[in-house]
Length: 108
Length: 117
Image (cartoon, rainbow over all chains, first blue to last red; front, side):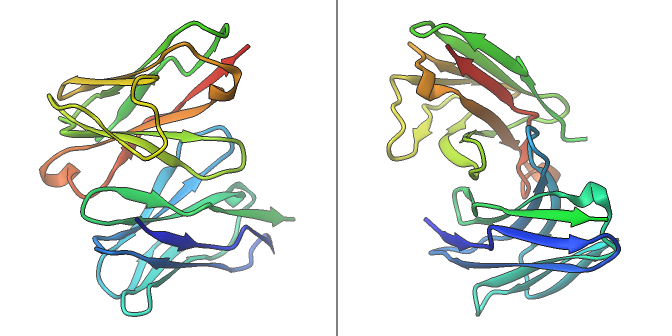
């Protein structure tokens, strides 16, 4: 299995930038995913990293360092609708395991 | 593409009864389906993994006789919670993975909120 750690909560102001860190330990790395989950809804896919480096997709970017077992999700130009839980998930050969999630609250 | 549906979206049942939740892949063939459970303010916990036509593989601590999983076709998996109790009240989410372009990502259904009274 994997040990996946991410902060529990973060608060930021509308228009600002927030970086959510995720560290993991896995026996067979096969990709790292970030999902967004609003309360009472299923997770929605944000990004996927399997190689080291930065993947940019609009206001969201995700970074991976496999040697350090580290990833971050960068949210730019925060909007109120970005208030949600952000889940870091690591896939080994068989399954996807989720971190506990980081609740991001965007304030006006 | 790659849409997964779940039915029902919410259900309330009495303690001791059984509830069946359906998970369907609408536009791709799901060779593998996953069932997760999520309690309030907690992350998704994998319950079991099923491959079409095979018995499901349950995670440690998940009772296979209580949570019956059937994956009889490439587009449908069902989770039956037997003899439900209030502690089974949770948000149940399925996800599916296919082949080819749908192989690297898991596509999630919208979830089913189960309340056992």
